[in-house]
Amino acid sequence: MTARDEQLDDAQSNKMSRAELDAMDASVFGRSLLSMGSLMSTSNVIMQLADPAIGYGVARSPVENGRLDTHPIKRARTTASYLAVAVFGNADDRRRYRRAVNRQHAQVRSTDDSPVEYNAMRADLQLWVAACLYYGWEDIYERVHGPIPAHTRDTFYQQGKVLGTTLQMPAEHWPADRDAFTVYWNDRVAKIDISDEVRDFLLDIANFGYASDSIARRFGPIKYRRTIGFLPPEFRDALRVEWTAEDQAWFDDYVAAAVRKERRKPRWLSQLMFTALLWDTRLRARLGRPLM
Image (cartoon, rainbow, N blue to C red; front, side, top):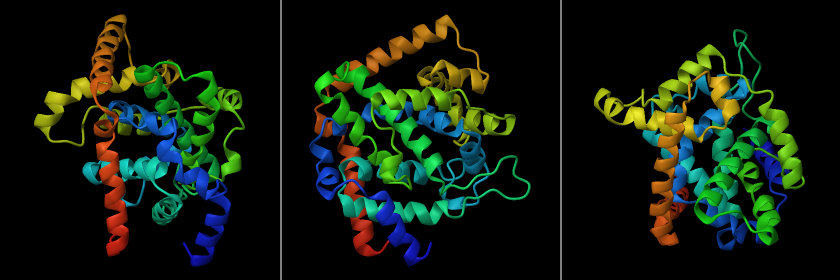
């Protein structure tokens, strides 16, 4: 990406005011970034990759050092850092991280033998990624705190656009209000499609297939059941997995225990990892080290 491209990207993607962005850590939306959210991280990845262009783009990504299946710890750090920067960072933090993401995404493009055409810089694909993240964060927030109050719901939703503008999505692409988001979501969910190739890639991630055999055997079954449990039914159908009443009962008990644990935590403890990652990205930037 050239310096000119980065200038255009800043002008396009940063249409939220600096004050609006910098106030994020004091907002109701900031309360959605909880440690419990890590439980549904793989589910959210599956939701994002249910778009064929994103699914193939990630499964066939040439960016070796950013692949989840070969560098899971690094990928987990960079993804969590992105969330920390998006929600708790200031406008400068977001600009730096967006540029780092851009350099990675600029390399992810379809080739002549790709089943579908994709380009990771496409704003519509980044809107879908942001929409999946918002859907997941709203889900976690309401599981822990209860329904979002009517007087804060619009603020919560509007601040969610930062999940896209910290990527390549122009702010005006975010659906105008929560009702418009529902229309967009339902339309996009009706178009999801997971091929056999992408399905194998996703199920391997869901089963801890990238970990050692001992870790996969011990933690894989729980991770898989938890991952499938957080998926809306349409995504389970697209993934072609079985989900029984017994599975649902296990999942309900598992989530209820996690919610009780989360509610006992002070917010600073629940968000400690993200706070540390935000400071890590700032230190990396100061030292000239790669953010990703």
